[in-house]
Image (cartoon, rainbow over the protein chains, first blue to last red):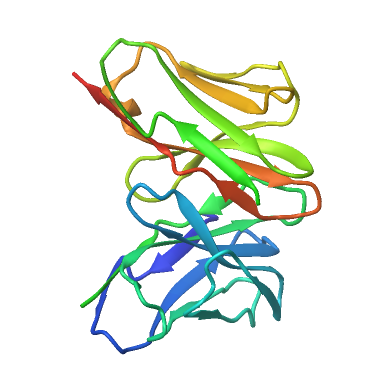
Length: 113
Length: 111
């Protein structure tokens, strides 16, 4: 079955620790995206990548980093520089430019205390 | 700056009611408007609209785009409790693979 997987579903961390969220897709999609969702805020774009070894900042990239070493994988690191990291994080993929339908993973809920 | 505004932000209706959700936008080089349904976790795709005045329909859900007035509506007829969800509107632009999302409308259908 083709799809997007994110792990873990729930993650708890102490303030000051970096944490990496996993996102894998087997849809053979070129483009991948990371969003953050807070209650009542819709989805805000953190980073996106249209091709392996290349990625761009989205609207709220500060305090986050990504890598795209393989087409299937787009991990997101939430660094200690992110002031309010507690949120629901969604990964998505699409076939690429001008193809707007994005497919979403199940999300990771990160709680930092 | 691109803007996508959804209204209302939340709505409670009784099973069997008809609801209309609104999405207005201000973006440069508009290409398409998409609707997603988010029940608990992953948003799932409902419709993509690119042409004005052409209704897209799937069962009890339908949507239409007005490119002159820069808005779209999503209609749900004969609502069921399973329609309870957040409905997200997003807009895509020519030459970009990214979408700009609105804040969503949280719909609760009570039995």
